[in-house]
Image (tube, rainbow, N blue to C red; front, side, top):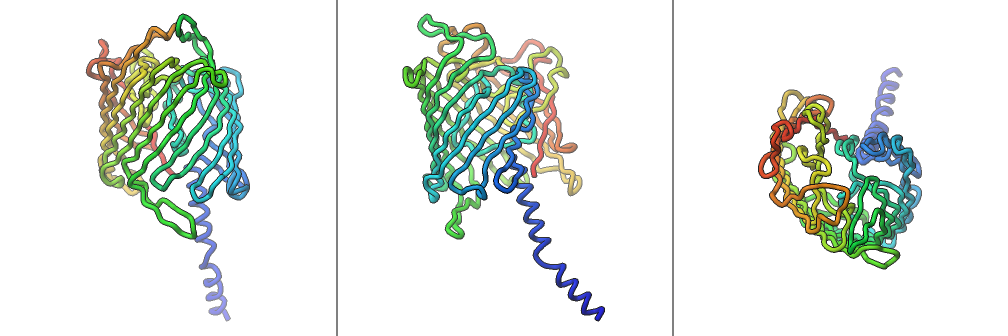
Length: 412
């Protein structure tokens, strides 16, 4: 009797529940790694939970997005945040309807009242990107307010081609003293109507089909992103006529589990009546303070660590960033620091700098260079970074050419 009971207990304890629990934990960790806290019908979007920058101070709030349990055809996504330094709420209301399941075609609408960093460019086709800690945000000071209405269409041409188009109208109000002088008229705030089309080409992706659903089994590199923006004057109240062409490629060489190299090339060209808000800043990440230790902060993933914020703006630019990741030091199973060698180069120019009033900046026409290294994952995901600025834009004081910072790398 006792033996039979033990066998039955053993049989009952073995099967599916531990595997199911393990699967649920993996799904939860994957969701958290993508910045979502899942619930039955809505997922909390953790990107808006807490951030900090020089204009808003602490910025906190929450976003929500519906999941497939709510609907596989309709989706809603919104967020609301509050800045404790500027004492202002920002929010976005959006939603979409899927027009074709086979090509994952969605029609999306959104209304957004928020801030955007001056000189920043986003590709429509970029996948959602989430970091638990976004170091570069800490030091950004140049923002513009925008109220934007948008309608967008996203479409998978194939598993190697992704396309998205968008039409937006935006009311732009810089948070800093700025005037954009065109034909003798100085604009302190302005309206922009623009149309965008973006393509992402991933020629080395591999695909499998299971249960009539397509799934990418391998993310191949290099990947290429292209985007064209056309601002339309006198259409829906638009004030300016300009165009932008943007390009980016990302390439990995080697085995990510051992030693490998990463090359990122980003290029942009803007022409026409284009205000500073929509130009290029080349990803700076250095605070304007006298001492090295006063500038001690956290290094970004793809930023120029020795380039000061608001030091350069361009209407045409190209950046090259090369990183070589050495094989992690196998000190123990759980402690494996990694050395990364880094070189960055940027070149650019500005055709009509005199149009931009009440702000001073330099161009990148002589070429900007910095090199250094990171020693990552030393303790709790933190490491150290050292970068040195040299070449045409080398500064007279040696201290001003040096950036010594933390790094932060963690993944779920």
